[in-house]
View 1 (cartoon, rainbow, N blue to C red):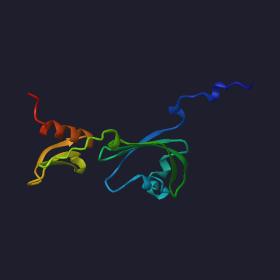
View 2: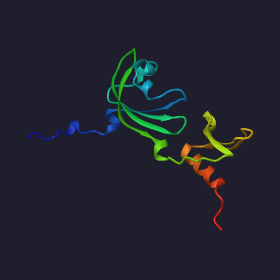
View 3: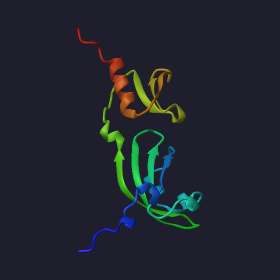
View 4: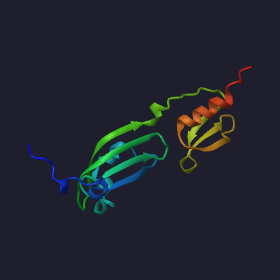
Length: 141
């Protein structure tokens, strides 16, 4: 049996980079698999780099590995992927209020009757639904 050579044992930070991107509303996981999606950053990434993907609405996380990179774009593969909406499944059905993703203002609680914003800048849909539930559930006597 041949043992591992010390020159082959390195800290990951010296071998590959880890990048992070935010997908915008309207972009999704299918876009990540298109090499041209990455064309503007292709020169910065190299094979085996990792890319963490978050979504503006706070309900998605993925980790990608770069398979190849050239002037045209980048080919990636999914290492893992999590739909945070499913983890925080806290659907609230209330006649007077609703939650809505509002871009830079993140998740908000809105009043149905006049679309007035009640609370904003809530990080995830699950947290917004929980606050709405707390707000609308009568306190125990």
